[in-house]
Length: 132
Ligand SMILES: [Cu+2]
Image 1 (tube, rainbow, N blue to C red):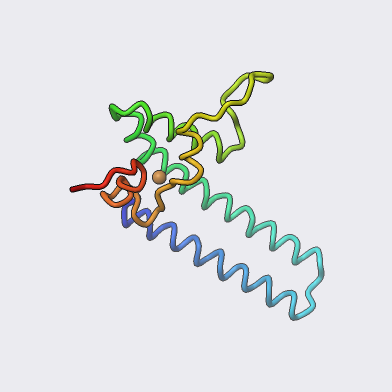
Image 2: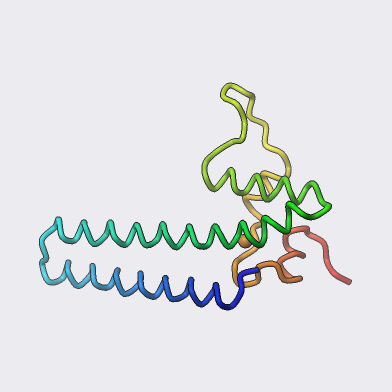
């Protein structure tokens, strides 16, 4: 679960990036030199990469740490499969036949969102279990 402090930090980063993108729009409208615009876009891309890095660190420290410590091997497998997928890795040696596990397939379609990260509702969505 992302703490409010972390979420605030992530929100602030996104607002900064948003402002930066508006700046790029302005440059385009005002006929700035193409290379200057390209350099600004590269800066935005780097800022987005840093945002993803911060969010990934948060995910590893919370969701993944919880899944790894937990008793459910399926949940561990799902967390690892998700990470491998997001980095385009298979976790398999080259030439090994590709067979996706149920957990890997679920990882693609059943991701909990940041906003409700780790709460009962997202745990329900993740496991498909309804709390009674
Ligand atoms: Cu997470």
